[in-house]
Image: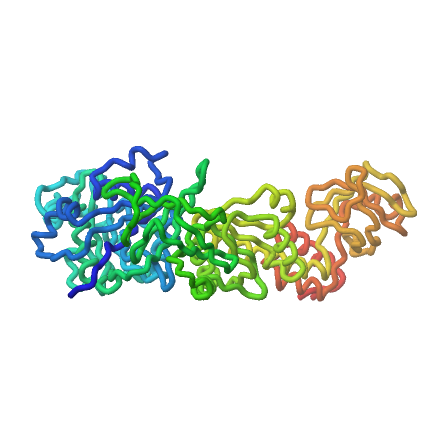
Amino acid sequence: MRSQIRQPIITVAGHVDHGKTSILDALRSSSVQEGEAGGITQKISFTSYPVENLKKACPLIEKSGINLNIPGFLLIDTPGHAAFTNLRKRGGSLADLAVLVIDINEGIKPQTAEVIQILKLNKTPFVIALNKIDKITGWRKSGGSLKKSVESQNERVSQEFLEKYYTLQGALQSYSLDTDLFYNISDFTKKIALVPCSAATHEGIPELILVIAGLSEKFLGKRLELHDDPKGVMLEVKKEKSASAIEAILYDGELKRTDEIAVASLTGEPIITKIRILEEIKPISSKFEPKEKVAASTGIRMQLTEKTEILPGMPFLKFKNNFEEIKNLFKKELGESIQTEKQGIIAKADSLGSLEALLVLLKQSNVSVVKAGIGEINKSDVINAKANLDINELDSVIVGFNIGISDDAKEILGKTKVITNDIVYKLIEDLVLWRKEKIAEIEKKRLMGLSTICKLELLHQYVFRNTKPAIFGVKVSGGKLIKNLSMIDENDEKIGNVKNIQQEKNSVDESGVGDEVAISISNVNYERQLKEKKFLYSNIGESQFKEFKKNKDLLNPSEIKVLQEIADIKRRTKEDWGM
């Protein structure tokens, strides 16, 4: 006798505006997309899609002789990355299958790349819906099969379709994805199916359902077998006036309203709570209905008695007075996914799944993490980042994935670097770029510690004191002026060290290009020694010059020009100076 099986969990994901929700609408024959703000999915939404509806939407299932044992699909529509990364459990993704929606006319975009990487990371099998074929100029929907429709377009349209298809296929190949049109594939374990379709005209939607149903039936097998004990994942916590409503997925077992559940937390102590209200998503609907018990897999909404804050992405299971066992189980699960080092940056994300994805990608980019957490960047994170400044400047940064910064953190931020983004790969790119620039900055500081490149233009109209010390006006023409800098003139005559720098009546330690300042130099007589001069230069030793030359990629064009002028001055008395 065959074990009871649940409906597979299918995630629909892809780049914003490529038609994820429209594809779901076509599957559900609904019009959810039109009602959303700006046509972009604002929340996680479940759709319970019973097998009888599947067969009605896709007569091809019975025609092709597939014997469907699955009770239907649980479809998940995802806003950007959030639900997609939250759909996780120990050992990988909670999603059994994914539909990656790509606009055939636009190809791979940042969020597409993000989804591909997460799918590969979680080893989630997926099909690709090549949406918006109706936008190819001149495309005509035929009454026959999708294969016939693709092959019966006129020559110009067919050529345009094939160009877009082959371009996309090549781009997917760069992600090590071997793909083909679904009707050309004989072994679905070796190739990823591409299904051309249009959410607008519904062309290709029955074939998309057929491919998902076929893959579910053929390859998911044991993964769909149901057990007795309920297990799930908290997806989204919605704060309402009276209480918080939690949307979650029950992916195994049967959950009763009278059950006590244990929810994982970052403190290591499981949250034990009773269920006040249990609701289940209605078939082909966005509405929930009250239930005394629900069976996996299904989308549920709960109100809990416990007031402790529940974090998105956290696993939950039935509590059977086995606190220590559950504590160890959760500790192992969270410990495997949130591993930190003794030294490194601070990483924050909006959910456990997001944090996991971020940590994996940071590790791949050779970035160590000392502290990781869920929720907005707070005061404590900034304090820790500032402490990192004394250990390693490269670690004095906080990265935030799809989160903001609290007001009290902003108040003490100062020069602490914070990098946030709602696309994980863009976040990593921004961090890698910042670290590269920081390394160059640190190296330049070391280089400038040897000496400083500087060129000053004398402003003869501003002489405040002729001698003991001479105080006069200058303009920084190149490089940087700092206190105690040794200066020479255009004939390599030593003038003296800059004792003080004054800018707008305030004493300063340094000045940059374009600044007009007053400086004081001891043991110089301005009238006698400087009145006929036009420029002063910093006095650089030969070995220092060679070091600058070796690292000129760290210098800006202005500094390189001044360095060359100093070399020209020095070579008037020693031809091979700095060679």
